[in-house]
Image 1 (tube, helix red, strand yellow):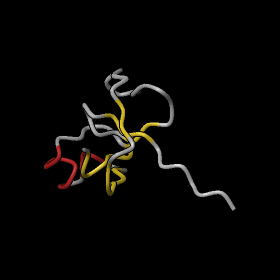
Image 2 (cartoon, helix red, strand yellow):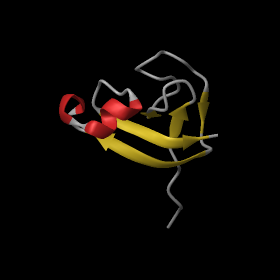
Image 3 (cartoon, helix red, strand yellow):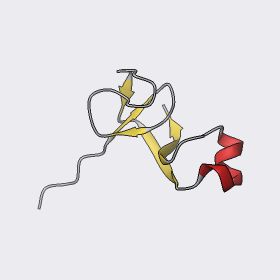
Length: 65
């Protein structure tokens, strides 16, 4: 079985992306050097989303290098 490929993360907004550019900020400055992520489902009622300044649902990386 082949190892699973780690997805890319936008260095600008820390969003986990599936393509070759970030759909949130439009940046193509992506990296695979990141650790941990958080899934924001309801940012309006999430204290963590407010603390991280995330206002749209999605996957956000915690540590991006």
